[in-house]
Length: 384
Image 1: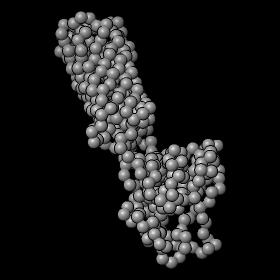
Image 2: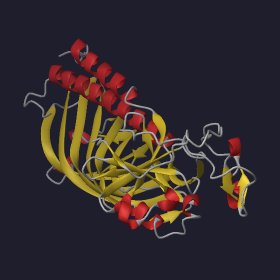
Image 3: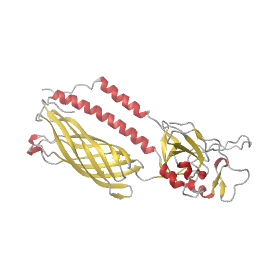
Image 4: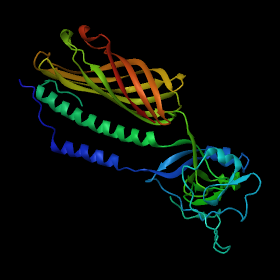
Protein backbone atom coordinates (compact mmCIF):
# COMPACT_ATOMS: atom_id res chain seq x y z
CA UNK A 1 0.00 0.00 0.00
CA UNK A 2 1.41 3.40 -0.96
CA UNK A 3 2.31 5.82 1.81
CA UNK A 4 2.30 8.91 -0.42
CA UNK A 5 0.45 11.77 1.26
CA UNK A 6 -2.33 13.77 -0.31
CA UNK A 7 -1.75 17.53 -0.71
CA UNK A 8 -2.87 19.84 2.10
CA UNK A 9 -6.41 21.08 1.28
CA UNK A 10 -6.64 24.63 -0.01
CA UNK A 11 -8.99 25.75 2.78
CA UNK A 12 -6.46 24.68 5.42
CA UNK A 13 -3.75 26.66 3.69
CA UNK A 14 -6.02 29.72 3.57
CA UNK A 15 -6.81 29.35 7.27
CA UNK A 16 -3.11 29.23 8.12
CA UNK A 17 -2.44 32.29 5.95
CA UNK A 18 -5.33 34.18 7.56
CA UNK A 19 -3.94 33.42 11.01
CA UNK A 20 -0.48 34.61 9.93
CA UNK A 21 -1.84 37.93 8.64
CA UNK A 22 -4.01 38.47 11.73
CA UNK A 23 -1.10 37.90 14.10
CA UNK A 24 1.40 40.03 12.21
CA UNK A 25 -1.02 42.98 11.98
CA UNK A 26 -2.35 42.78 15.55
CA UNK A 27 -0.74 46.00 16.77
CA UNK A 28 2.47 47.97 17.34
CA UNK A 29 4.09 49.21 20.50
CA UNK A 30 3.17 52.78 21.41
CA UNK A 31 4.31 55.60 23.69
CA UNK A 32 1.77 54.87 26.46
CA UNK A 33 2.87 53.01 29.59
CA UNK A 34 0.51 51.38 32.08
CA UNK A 35 1.04 51.73 35.83
CA UNK A 36 -0.73 49.22 38.07
CA UNK A 37 -2.73 50.30 41.11
CA UNK A 38 -0.23 48.70 43.52
CA UNK A 39 2.50 50.91 42.03
CA UNK A 40 0.28 53.98 42.35
CA UNK A 41 -0.27 53.18 46.03
CA UNK A 42 3.50 53.00 46.49
CA UNK A 43 4.07 56.28 44.69
CA UNK A 44 1.66 58.30 46.83
CA UNK A 45 3.76 57.33 49.88
CA UNK A 46 6.91 58.78 48.28
CA UNK A 47 8.16 62.38 48.43
CA UNK A 48 6.25 64.29 45.70
CA UNK A 49 9.47 65.81 44.34
CA UNK A 50 11.27 62.47 43.91
CA UNK A 51 8.44 60.03 43.10
CA UNK A 52 8.89 60.57 39.36
CA UNK A 53 12.42 59.18 39.20
CA UNK A 54 11.42 55.51 39.56
CA UNK A 55 8.00 54.34 38.30
CA UNK A 56 7.36 50.71 37.34
CA UNK A 57 5.45 50.73 34.05
CA UNK A 58 4.61 48.45 31.12
CA UNK A 59 4.60 49.63 27.49
CA UNK A 60 1.22 49.33 25.75
CA UNK A 61 0.18 48.54 22.19
CA UNK A 62 -1.36 51.12 19.87
CA UNK A 63 -4.47 48.92 19.68
CA UNK A 64 -5.05 49.34 23.42
CA UNK A 65 -7.46 52.03 24.62
CA UNK A 66 -5.72 55.38 24.91
CA UNK A 67 -6.51 58.14 27.43
CA UNK A 68 -7.72 61.60 26.58
CA UNK A 69 -4.68 63.83 25.89
CA UNK A 70 -3.52 66.03 28.74
CA UNK A 71 -3.52 69.78 28.31
CA UNK A 72 -0.29 71.70 27.55
CA UNK A 73 2.31 71.55 30.30
CA UNK A 74 4.75 74.37 30.95
CA UNK A 75 7.52 75.25 33.41
CA UNK A 76 6.05 77.05 36.40
CA UNK A 77 7.60 80.47 35.68
CA UNK A 78 9.92 82.49 33.48
CA UNK A 79 13.58 83.05 34.26
CA UNK A 80 16.33 80.73 35.49
CA UNK A 81 15.52 77.42 37.19
CA UNK A 82 15.04 77.53 40.96
CA UNK A 83 17.52 75.85 43.35
CA UNK A 84 17.65 72.09 42.83
CA UNK A 85 16.56 72.34 39.17
CA UNK A 86 18.44 72.54 35.87
CA UNK A 87 17.41 73.43 32.33
CA UNK A 88 16.46 70.32 30.36
CA UNK A 89 15.57 69.61 26.75
CA UNK A 90 13.40 72.20 24.98
CA UNK A 91 13.43 74.57 27.96
CA UNK A 92 11.91 72.32 30.61
CA UNK A 93 13.16 72.50 34.18
CA UNK A 94 14.25 69.19 35.64
CA UNK A 95 15.46 68.14 39.10
CA UNK A 96 19.27 68.20 39.14
CA UNK A 97 19.63 64.44 39.56
CA UNK A 98 17.75 63.87 36.26
CA UNK A 99 20.80 65.19 34.41
CA UNK A 100 22.51 61.87 35.19
CA UNK A 101 19.76 60.07 33.23
CA UNK A 102 20.90 61.69 29.96
CA UNK A 103 18.47 62.74 27.24
CA UNK A 104 14.92 61.40 27.59
CA UNK A 105 13.96 58.38 25.47
CA UNK A 106 10.84 60.25 24.34
CA UNK A 107 11.43 63.89 23.50
CA UNK A 108 8.93 66.29 25.04
CA UNK A 109 6.98 68.67 22.80
CA UNK A 110 8.87 71.86 21.98
CA UNK A 111 8.12 74.43 24.68
CA UNK A 112 6.85 77.85 23.70
CA UNK A 113 5.67 80.22 26.38
CA UNK A 114 2.02 81.16 25.73
CA UNK A 115 0.18 84.11 27.12
CA UNK A 116 -1.35 83.70 30.55
CA UNK A 117 -4.82 83.37 29.01
CA UNK A 118 -3.73 80.62 26.62
CA UNK A 119 -2.27 78.31 29.26
CA UNK A 120 -4.38 75.26 30.09
CA UNK A 121 -2.94 73.48 33.12
CA UNK A 122 -3.53 69.80 33.82
CA UNK A 123 -6.78 69.35 35.69
CA UNK A 124 -8.18 66.65 37.92
CA UNK A 125 -11.67 66.65 36.47
CA UNK A 126 -13.23 63.36 35.38
CA UNK A 127 -13.85 63.15 31.64
CA UNK A 128 -16.09 60.86 29.60
CA UNK A 129 -15.78 57.08 30.16
CA UNK A 130 -13.77 54.74 28.00
CA UNK A 131 -14.88 52.31 28.77
CA UNK A 132 -7.55 13.74 16.98
CA UNK A 133 -7.81 10.51 17.49
CA UNK A 134 -6.71 7.68 15.17
CA UNK A 135 -8.71 5.08 13.25
CA UNK A 136 -8.60 1.41 14.17
CA UNK A 137 -7.34 0.48 10.72
CA UNK A 138 -4.16 2.58 10.95
CA UNK A 139 -4.23 2.93 7.17
CA UNK A 140 -1.45 4.91 5.55
CA UNK A 141 -3.98 7.19 3.85
CA UNK A 142 -5.38 8.20 7.22
CA UNK A 143 -1.88 8.57 8.62
CA UNK A 144 -1.01 10.89 5.73
CA UNK A 145 -4.12 13.00 6.30
CA UNK A 146 -3.44 13.26 10.03
CA UNK A 147 0.16 14.15 9.24
CA UNK A 148 -0.93 16.97 6.95
CA UNK A 149 -3.23 18.35 9.64
CA UNK A 150 -0.35 18.21 12.14
CA UNK A 151 1.86 20.17 9.73
CA UNK A 152 -0.79 22.92 9.46
CA UNK A 153 -1.17 23.09 13.27
CA UNK A 154 2.60 23.31 13.65
CA UNK A 155 2.83 26.13 11.09
CA UNK A 156 0.13 28.17 12.80
CA UNK A 157 1.62 27.54 16.27
CA UNK A 158 5.09 28.61 15.17
CA UNK A 159 3.81 31.79 13.47
CA UNK A 160 1.84 32.77 16.57
CA UNK A 161 4.86 32.07 18.77
CA UNK A 162 7.28 34.08 16.64
CA UNK A 163 4.89 37.05 16.50
CA UNK A 164 4.38 37.01 20.28
CA UNK A 165 8.10 36.61 20.93
CA UNK A 166 8.92 39.52 18.61
CA UNK A 167 6.46 41.89 20.29
CA UNK A 168 7.17 40.85 23.87
CA UNK A 169 10.91 40.85 23.24
CA UNK A 170 10.72 44.49 22.16
CA UNK A 171 8.11 45.54 24.74
CA UNK A 172 9.52 47.54 27.64
CA UNK A 173 8.65 46.67 31.22
CA UNK A 174 10.58 48.19 34.07
CA UNK A 175 11.57 51.50 35.63
CA UNK A 176 10.78 54.81 33.91
CA UNK A 177 11.42 58.37 35.03
CA UNK A 178 9.21 61.39 34.40
CA UNK A 179 9.12 64.97 35.65
CA UNK A 180 7.55 65.31 39.13
CA UNK A 181 4.73 67.31 37.49
CA UNK A 182 4.13 64.77 34.69
CA UNK A 183 0.41 64.24 33.90
CA UNK A 184 -0.98 60.92 35.14
CA UNK A 185 -4.09 59.56 33.39
CA UNK A 186 -6.27 57.69 35.89
CA UNK A 187 -8.74 55.01 34.76
CA UNK A 188 -11.74 54.70 37.07
CA UNK A 189 -13.69 51.52 37.76
CA UNK A 190 -16.92 52.94 36.35
CA UNK A 191 -15.32 53.84 33.05
CA UNK A 192 -14.36 57.48 33.61
CA UNK A 193 -10.95 59.13 33.28
CA UNK A 194 -9.20 61.92 35.13
CA UNK A 195 -5.78 63.54 34.89
CA UNK A 196 -3.63 64.76 37.77
CA UNK A 197 -0.03 65.85 38.18
CA UNK A 198 2.21 63.14 39.62
CA UNK A 199 3.41 65.35 42.49
CA UNK A 200 -0.22 66.13 43.39
CA UNK A 201 -1.37 62.48 43.40
CA UNK A 202 -2.95 61.51 46.76
CA UNK A 203 -4.71 58.44 48.19
CA UNK A 204 -8.04 60.21 47.62
CA UNK A 205 -7.39 60.17 43.88
CA UNK A 206 -7.06 56.36 43.99
CA UNK A 207 -10.33 55.48 45.70
CA UNK A 208 -12.00 54.04 42.58
CA UNK A 209 -8.97 53.84 40.26
CA UNK A 210 -7.98 50.58 38.58
CA UNK A 211 -4.79 51.68 36.83
CA UNK A 212 -3.02 54.67 35.33
CA UNK A 213 -1.32 55.59 32.05
CA UNK A 214 1.74 57.73 31.38
CA UNK A 215 2.55 59.10 27.95
CA UNK A 216 6.19 59.51 26.96
CA UNK A 217 5.19 62.39 24.68
CA UNK A 218 3.63 64.54 27.37
CA UNK A 219 5.17 66.62 30.15
CA UNK A 220 8.95 66.86 29.88
CA UNK A 221 9.33 63.48 28.16
CA UNK A 222 10.20 60.06 29.61
CA UNK A 223 13.39 58.20 30.49
CA UNK A 224 13.66 54.40 30.33
CA UNK A 225 15.92 53.54 33.25
CA UNK A 226 16.27 49.78 32.89
CA UNK A 227 14.11 46.77 32.05
CA UNK A 228 13.00 44.52 34.89
CA UNK A 229 14.35 40.95 35.28
CA UNK A 230 12.46 38.01 33.81
CA UNK A 231 8.90 38.01 35.12
CA UNK A 232 6.88 34.85 34.44
CA UNK A 233 3.87 35.78 36.53
CA UNK A 234 0.72 35.68 34.41
CA UNK A 235 -0.19 33.82 31.23
CA UNK A 236 2.48 32.08 29.16
CA UNK A 237 2.78 30.74 25.61
CA UNK A 238 5.68 28.40 24.92
CA UNK A 239 6.87 26.71 21.74
CA UNK A 240 9.92 24.83 20.57
CA UNK A 241 11.35 22.06 18.41
CA UNK A 242 13.89 19.29 18.77
CA UNK A 243 14.58 15.59 18.59
CA UNK A 244 11.59 13.36 19.42
CA UNK A 245 11.06 9.58 19.27
CA UNK A 246 8.28 7.03 18.91
CA UNK A 247 8.81 3.50 20.26
CA UNK A 248 7.24 0.75 18.12
CA UNK A 249 7.07 -3.04 18.53
CA UNK A 250 10.07 -4.96 17.32
CA UNK A 251 12.56 -2.51 18.75
CA UNK A 252 11.97 0.18 16.11
CA UNK A 253 12.14 3.75 17.33
CA UNK A 254 11.71 6.28 14.50
CA UNK A 255 13.13 9.68 15.34
CA UNK A 256 12.15 12.93 13.70
CA UNK A 257 11.79 16.63 14.32
CA UNK A 258 9.13 17.15 16.98
CA UNK A 259 7.36 20.35 17.99
CA UNK A 260 6.01 21.42 21.37
CA UNK A 261 3.39 24.05 22.21
CA UNK A 262 2.05 25.02 25.63
CA UNK A 263 -0.35 27.56 27.08
CA UNK A 264 -0.76 28.15 30.79
CA UNK A 265 -0.50 30.40 33.80
CA UNK A 266 2.17 31.23 36.38
CA UNK A 267 0.52 32.30 39.67
CA UNK A 268 4.02 33.19 40.92
CA UNK A 269 7.28 33.87 39.09
CA UNK A 270 8.84 30.46 39.82
CA UNK A 271 5.89 28.06 39.35
CA UNK A 272 3.39 27.52 36.55
CA UNK A 273 0.76 25.09 35.24
CA UNK A 274 0.35 24.59 31.49
CA UNK A 275 -1.61 22.64 28.92
CA UNK A 276 1.08 20.96 26.87
CA UNK A 277 1.09 19.28 23.44
CA UNK A 278 3.82 17.62 21.39
CA UNK A 279 3.44 16.89 17.69
CA UNK A 280 5.58 14.55 15.62
CA UNK A 281 5.07 13.13 12.12
CA UNK A 282 7.33 11.74 9.43
CA UNK A 283 8.49 8.87 7.24
CA UNK A 284 10.73 6.00 8.35
CA UNK A 285 11.83 2.75 6.66
CA UNK A 286 9.46 3.39 3.77
CA UNK A 287 6.45 3.87 6.04
CA UNK A 288 4.65 6.77 7.71
CA UNK A 289 3.92 7.53 11.35
CA UNK A 290 2.61 10.22 13.68
CA UNK A 291 2.70 10.76 17.41
CA UNK A 292 0.61 13.32 19.32
CA UNK A 293 0.69 13.97 23.09
CA UNK A 294 -1.70 16.22 24.98
CA UNK A 295 -1.59 16.76 28.74
CA UNK A 296 -0.90 18.98 31.72
CA UNK A 297 2.51 20.05 32.99
CA UNK A 298 3.87 21.74 36.13
CA UNK A 299 7.08 23.79 35.83
CA UNK A 300 9.26 25.01 38.69
CA UNK A 301 12.34 27.28 38.50
CA UNK A 302 13.95 27.37 41.96
CA UNK A 303 17.54 28.10 40.82
CA UNK A 304 18.72 31.41 39.33
CA UNK A 305 22.30 32.07 38.26
CA UNK A 306 22.59 35.53 36.70
CA UNK A 307 20.27 35.24 33.67
CA UNK A 308 20.11 31.45 33.70
CA UNK A 309 17.14 29.78 35.41
CA UNK A 310 17.08 26.04 36.18
CA UNK A 311 14.41 23.68 37.41
CA UNK A 312 12.38 20.48 36.91
CA UNK A 313 9.00 19.75 35.36
CA UNK A 314 6.51 16.88 35.58
CA UNK A 315 3.38 16.15 33.60
CA UNK A 316 1.13 13.59 32.02
CA UNK A 317 -1.78 13.08 29.67
CA UNK A 318 -2.90 11.09 26.63
CA UNK A 319 -0.85 9.92 23.67
CA UNK A 320 -2.16 9.05 20.19
CA UNK A 321 0.09 7.34 17.63
CA UNK A 322 -0.07 5.23 14.49
CA UNK A 323 2.35 3.72 11.98
CA UNK A 324 2.11 1.68 8.77
CA UNK A 325 3.86 0.93 5.54
CA UNK A 326 7.32 -0.13 4.43
CA UNK A 327 9.29 -1.72 7.22
CA UNK A 328 7.13 -0.26 9.98
CA UNK A 329 4.64 -2.39 11.92
CA UNK A 330 0.97 -1.54 11.58
CA UNK A 331 -0.04 0.12 14.85
CA UNK A 332 -2.74 2.47 16.03
CA UNK A 333 -3.82 3.38 19.52
CA UNK A 334 -4.18 5.79 22.40
CA UNK A 335 -2.63 5.40 25.81
CA UNK A 336 -1.70 7.57 28.80
CA UNK A 337 1.81 8.87 29.30
CA UNK A 338 3.86 10.35 32.14
CA UNK A 339 6.70 12.79 31.53
CA UNK A 340 9.36 14.49 33.62
CA UNK A 341 12.65 16.22 32.98
CA UNK A 342 14.85 19.27 33.37
CA UNK A 343 14.44 22.88 32.26
CA UNK A 344 17.02 25.56 31.54
CA UNK A 345 15.90 29.06 30.58
CA UNK A 346 18.04 32.00 29.55
CA UNK A 347 16.51 35.43 30.15
CA UNK A 348 16.23 37.51 26.97
CA UNK A 349 13.79 40.19 28.12
CA UNK A 350 11.36 40.80 30.98
CA UNK A 351 8.70 38.64 29.32
CA UNK A 352 10.78 36.40 27.03
CA UNK A 353 13.09 33.46 27.68
CA UNK A 354 15.11 31.01 25.58
CA UNK A 355 14.40 27.49 26.88
CA UNK A 356 16.06 24.07 26.69
CA UNK A 357 14.18 20.92 27.76
CA UNK A 358 15.35 17.37 28.36
CA UNK A 359 12.38 15.01 28.65
CA UNK A 360 11.74 11.42 29.71
CA UNK A 361 8.37 9.87 28.73
CA UNK A 362 6.87 6.65 30.04
CA UNK A 363 3.84 4.79 28.66
CA UNK A 364 2.61 2.74 31.64
CA UNK A 365 0.05 0.65 29.66
CA UNK A 366 2.25 -0.10 26.65
CA UNK A 367 3.40 -3.58 25.70
CA UNK A 368 6.57 -4.90 27.37
CA UNK A 369 8.77 -4.10 24.33
CA UNK A 370 7.49 -0.51 24.09
CA UNK A 371 7.35 0.37 27.77
CA UNK A 372 10.88 1.72 28.02
CA UNK A 373 11.51 5.37 28.84
CA UNK A 374 11.55 7.59 25.76
CA UNK A 375 14.04 10.45 25.81
CA UNK A 376 13.74 13.68 23.81
CA UNK A 377 15.01 17.25 23.88
CA UNK A 378 13.93 20.59 22.43
CA UNK A 379 14.92 24.24 22.23
CA UNK A 380 12.34 27.02 22.11
CA UNK A 381 10.99 30.30 23.42
CA UNK A 382 8.72 31.08 26.36
CA UNK A 383 6.60 34.24 26.21
CA UNK A 384 5.13 35.52 29.48
